[in-house]
Image 1 (tube, rainbow, N blue to C red):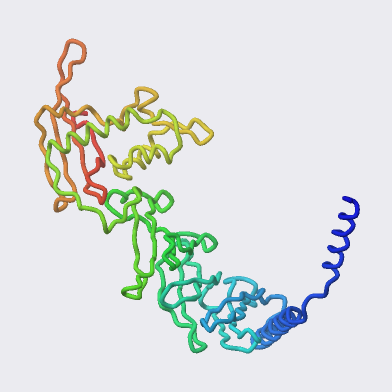
Image 2 (image 1 turned 135 degrees about the vertical axis):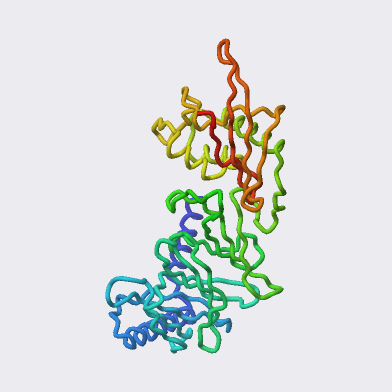
Length: 361
């Protein structure tokens, strides 16, 4: 019985495999192939391009008419430079809608993009040299491309630009990074710079893209409460907290973990100083500060006394402050007085320690 059933199933499968593809499906496939060939032939002939240099077609309903258009592109004939030097948009039947020489625009990639107001859009990603890349968002209407938004440099390579609907609101966002320029990063080079996350979102009410900047703590800058003035007691407590952070951090870890453990009490200027002058490299990506592995404590906050008087002076229109305090220490049988000084910067995260020194040296 099982043998007969198996033979029946085999016969049925062979019958299905040999069944002809419906004529309408064959026709659709043939028509599409013909449309592609027509578009590619016209595109290559118009710009005197080698047929093999023309891209594979991108099918996308870029004019929102309910059918996918054929989008073609080709690199520069000089064999260097942008990857998209020629652009062509054709109907689903292969008829020309628009062709354009965009060799001077340094476009490296074209991606589909959506938002709830314009529906289907195109994102043109171009190179900005050392600044990474930028994105131009364009709408295709009446056989013409018009820009509705352009980003500043995103500080990411063209192939790493992220365009997606992360918050699931029906609109694609554009993600990138922006260098954090502030007093607390003033001493950093381009290679050691700190970058905040940049997000361009579509605002359906204003019908515009709006830009949000997120700091190292993941909080949007526009939602922060600015720090108020600092007094001497607050400055002393911050110094105490900073020393505690230094002494309780992991003796060994990655440079990223060191920065994360100290970045909310010390400026990035000071952390960069530790990274450049105060680290022991243990190999395998592990580092540790000198002050946790020996007597070299030049970059360790000294013991300020929160119970003793200190003098605080505001500078730079209240954006910085300098605190001094005389501290007595018993060394052996003798008593010594050391005068310490610390500087503080007001940052978007609050007040931070920027530097300190022993003025008695």
